Length: 495
Image 1 (cartoon, rainbow, N blue to C red):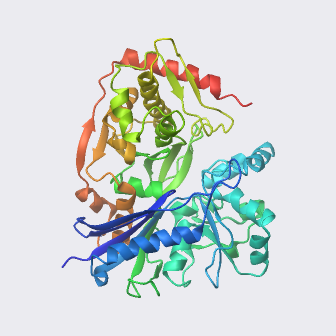
Image 2 (cartoon, rainbow, N blue to C red):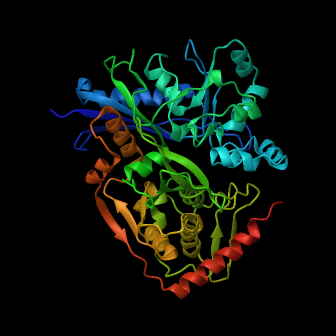
Image 3 (cartoon, one colour):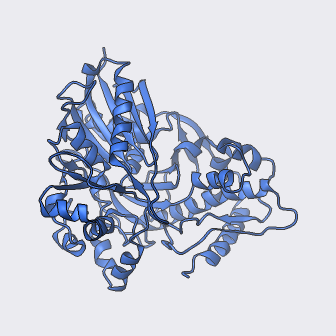
């Protein structure tokens, strides 16, 4: 019988545990949601025990349908910038995790920018000074949470992104490690050396002793110990941030290949090869993955904070639809948005604007506007945001993308995909297996355990479901982009 690989895809709202064999046949899977906590406006937290419980339930479910002794490697992929705090000895959480969406440190980031520190930080990390990333979240907890500060003083504090916390639990506390794709999202790691940077740690008042060891993405991180349903000694052989995992799961392993994951937000990554590319458009430079003894593969990244969440707002906030799946049929009842433009800046604008003060706006309404026009404008707003990011990536790379691979829940919306292709003027490629984040963790586990020897091997397993080619003419595309730019200009100025 074929060996098995187990993938833990720990996301913002739930955890998927997936088992595939080495021919990439889906053997078993389980999705478990968990609670979101909003203690104050702009604050978003998760309970690490609830996250671990979602992982444990997923493992319990899938191992009941397989022989767990056949598992040769475990891969972990995770929401990246979310930061966890736990006790090194007991593994108990010291406080709730602070989630990537959390904005509590916006003022601190602005202070650091005003002090002229962003260019140096960007040069080393490829990131901007934004509350999105882990660094200011950890600084805040050390200063404002007595439990965190006390644990640090006693030498009992362990800190890390979700992958590190799950690894500690899976290995009975024997391993405290992360990989460069996650470490590159903290504001602490030097992109070129792939090590924690002493000056950056001093800037945020963080001791390296609380942080995990950085190991290659495809390598052994530790072995299972004391996990019900799993034999002791199964190696964790891959750890990778969720968006980089989706890039790998899309088999985008060559420079110039790009993907867009349509989830709560939209996350776009372009493989730029073995050298980090500094963006002139304020996009992020990040590590895609590293192999044992190999140089890093880098990527450019841009994030639109609202994608699927726009449709959720139409459903929950306006009551225009009863279920998110209805948006496609409603928007398709009109041939165009008839001049209506929706800028979905509900939580500010991400790349390439990086304006947390922007607010959403619907413009171009007339007496003839209907909910169908607003629905179509919402889909167009998602697509316009992504077009801004991808065009900036092309300018940074100095070349056109080799087609855009799409995945995530909203990629199943055929109308949205056609609108995206039209606005971009580029071909879109949707894979047969759209859950590419979980698939990327399978690939990472397989590469780390020796099932595959090269990232090129994953291309052989990747299959296309459908391609979308642009049908909009160049003149209409230019006119639409100008209307979008005018609308963005009205919401993107700071208060």
